[in-house]
Amino acid sequence: MERKESAIENKTSPHSKFQERQFWSALKLFHNILLWIGLVPDDTLQELGLGKLLNRYLIIVLLNAIPGPDVVKKCNQITAYLPEKWFENSAMRTSIPQLENFIQFLLQSAQKLSRSEFRDEVKEILLILVKIRALTQAESFIEEYHLDHLKSVINQV
Image (cartoon, rainbow, N blue to C red; front, side, top):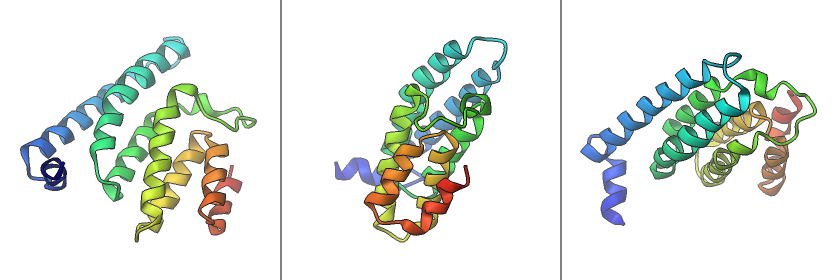
């Protein structure tokens, strides 16, 4: 276990470089697939983009990473490629089912980061949750960790 952690922490290690290349290549493919919005049915895009790429490849790299600014940057990039059309319903309080693993990862990362000096990253994660309409989970997190100062993030919706 110690060997794995040191390989991941060391950004110059072959393992770390491979995971970085794998992530960015998969993210590029993720983006290209989601560009087909309007041409391919949404359920097909969600299955390919979210079910196959996000939940099988991208999330694995994120799970192996140490929570911090780099992980939040990657999560922001994933979210930036998601079609806004999928989240236009203002009555949505929970997100697309295929995003559940991503949402759980975001919540776990926010939990780990809330115990450290990464307060801005916790806010960024909450903004991601709001953008993908995981409002119920964001509200629960704010209440559970007594982050009342971040309630305004949810009210921006």
